[in-house]
Length: 523
Image (cartoon, rainbow, N blue to C red):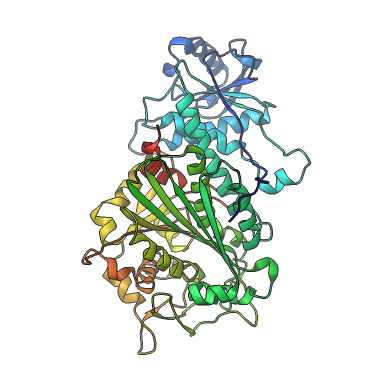
């Protein structure tokens, strides 16, 4: 596909470092500390300022405060304490959250050029990076808001980072990661018309349309092509095949860094731009928020934007965004249909509200075929797949589960460690015998059952058995640890971690995967 000049209205805020607390480039200081004892060296002047303030406001140690002082730029010190960092329950999210809260308070105080100060690099491995990312999360402006004005709205003109050392590498990484998260937020958070499948395709083509882009794009469209290549996805797309603005797209993205490829990451993302539930319609007021059912595919686009900015070497990444709308109507697919997958597996539909696995499975099969030709391939699915993942692990965790080869390599455990380091936590789930049994066909008619007819949240192992279904229906079962050609496959359910609604999407699991696969490939 020919690349065109990018028309995306991007959201990046420039990052600038300084070693001076009174640098007139900035109009306030946002200070993140666990206690005043963190204020040492050049920051010692702030220790007295904070101690004097706490004498008149004892609540300052547990809430964000604005202190007037001539010791900092703009005479405004935004004191945002992290709380304790050394207990069993403490992790780097305390720093991330304090940065986000501090920047929000700075904005409400009228700041447009905040300087972030976080002298706690010793506390966690990626403390500085997480502080900056927490601040940047607070500065994101939704795409629709940016597009609504002739001059795109910004919350801040610049974000400063205080450091007495060279911070160029740190800021480069933060900028690249945030560029990716912004793209993921734009797609994942925008309403179901602004980011219907054709418009997602337009956005992605513009996102990687610059002449210096290292990401290649292939867009597959047309219902007849889906019927031939991705029959399970075609079933979901069927209700929209005559609605031009809702027609599905499968967007393939490829990045290959310089040097000899050492490993290949291959990701399939669920991109259901709106989920009505289909014939098994979402009733009782639970449909609102279903435009967020595209956050898995949105994160894939964001991951590639991050790659395009940071340009890691010796790494190849292939992604597929499965963009469909699960509509209801005379053409919608229904329970009891039997559809033969790309892998030749007869799939009985049990519930049309389990459309995410339908949208991804044949594309995963296609990815599997590609993986057999790649160097050290690792396959993934990213999806807001089940409410059960939230019941099991809570509203802030990505559920990570691997097949035999993935578990033998301890890849789920690696993602959990790296997610913890990046303030984007993951929780371990497993794919076990009972999940495969659940997904097996119940009669002579079908090989596998797509789903039962109960919500995942009321089904035992409701977020694990869908992974077993995808393994069976995609043919990945033939590439387990007992195979002559084993393939590592890991499913990541981001239903809980994708972000609150109402609220801003998080872009999970971009940061965890960046730590696992990207950051160590940078110069």
